[in-house]
Image (cartoon, rainbow, N blue to C red; front, side, top):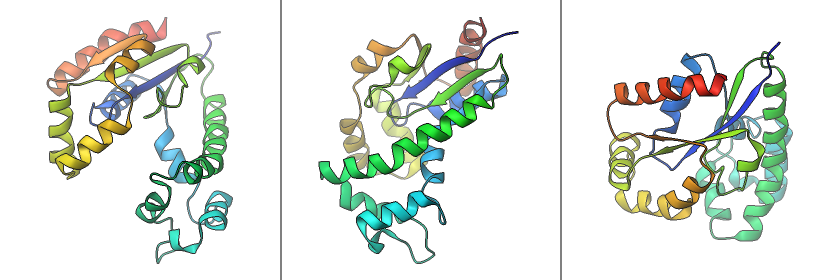
Length: 198
């Protein structure tokens, strides 16, 4: 009878963290995507969305009744109290759903929690192991501009709002450098996978 390994996965925007999550899932990891859960807990019809509207007003709703993320972003960006209010609505729901999904995993699973702001939120201590995906700023910039249609200025603003590589390195039990091809990345994941299972 094995036991669940609880692993945190993070990396700066454009580092390729999602690609690493997908490769780990291919190898049998149970991946829990915090960003996706954060969207689910404020989907139309949820009490999470009702609470967001009660706090921020109906101006945060799109015409179809879903959350208008850019409109909400404008209200909380640069307003510390508003951001904390939003986090108080979303974070407990994300934690509860994450715990549910982790509890449903097989008893010997490697459960990988994909958390973009793991370092910023001070969550490293919650995991047995933390994997950090690194890529240099020029590589990340290229991916964001090419793949996500961001401007360089937007990308720089995102970099500035996130933890530094030094801060990430301080919590990393395992580091994956993702500056090459998908085959290089696959090899790097193959290298750490046995360590995650042991």
